[in-house]
Length: 248
Ligand code: PEP
Image (cartoon, rainbow, N blue to C red; front, side, top):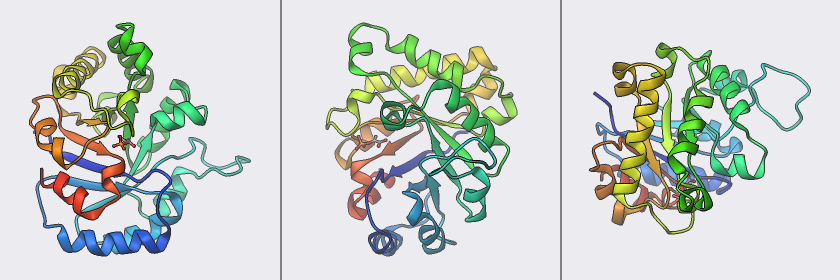
């Protein structure tokens, strides 16, 4: 059985003081639930959030990592550095990293492999842009991203990865994919995972939808058969909105 997983991606928002204030307010609203909950925060806030959320059941994730153990990679952080501060998850291949920071299918694959050698669980983001959807290439493109990301990863490790389907045209735009469009692509991702592995493995992999999820549409999205969770950007910055999504 797949456990629902709702995660917030704060992108490049909040200072440490603001993150601590969020954590205090959110913890007071949060009651232990069957829904896995996590916040993906900028690097400087991770340590405070790990300590604020300790024992609360709320997990903390980083938004990026380098795939090498160490080296002359100015401005980067290694998996070991994230492990040292007890981060639970790490995003890989968010579309903003693909679009603005040169993330490729190849580096995504290397990052997944590096994380899978650690205790940190990866959340892999995939998704098509508007042009690709309009040209009818969305499924092909997303399928290719999934295949490239999981290349050389065995089924035992593959089960540890969460996949977030995030159509680029729906991120931060206020435009949401219809629940049917999102469900359809999540089903397609599971079919690709079945092709790569087997039905049992594919059935165990949690697939989230992300793209303008908010309290008003969370229930409908989460009720779709193939959607196991949500990756939430803007609406995760406010405790009251994010708790409503977690309690969908
Ligand atoms: C995201 O950052 O992954 C995201 C889905 O953003 P938003 O919810 O703001 O569209």
